[in-house]
Amino acid sequence: MRIACQKLNEKVVLAGNTFSYNQTLGERTVAAGYKNGKVYENGEVVDGLGGGICQVSTTLYNAILYANLEIVERRNHQFVPSYAGAGLDATVVYGSIDFQFKNTRSYPIKIQCSVDKGICNFQIYGLKEETEYEVNVWANVISKTKTAIKSKAYRQLKLNGEVVSTELLSSDTYKVH
Image 1 (tube, rainbow, N blue to C red):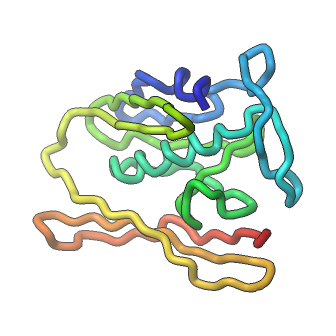
Image 2: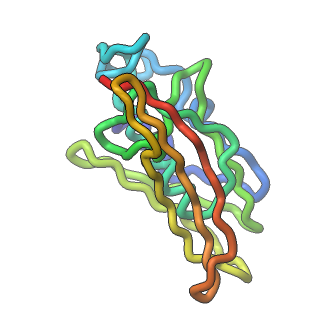
């Protein structure tokens, strides 16, 4: 987590540009300083190189949602992770599954992040737009069986206390373990 945060901290994304988590972090290798941690693989929890960086991608995903930026690419985990509710996570696998967002604001944004005692913290900075919205994000589990959990996640924008839009962000299915 510490390596991922170091690579993300102070990252600037220009207006109109798309940010790629995998491109920014690069391949997770021992030479790059990554260590083994818990990862989901083929329906099981196993040790894998770079385990733990999905907590970072998930925290960044939520920060981006609240910053009201466009999600370009995001996938959920196989299982609901312990650090995020169903529908509010973002898994990454170098070379195959990325988290990407587009800076749809008029000005550059800057990502600041840190990790301390296993807790990741993000802030997104930028200049205020002419119109700024109050952003609410939530997810609901819509069904649960012995084998699957299904959820839907939403982002709602309000202006002066009035709902302007409610967007379905994702409909996700997780395995039960």
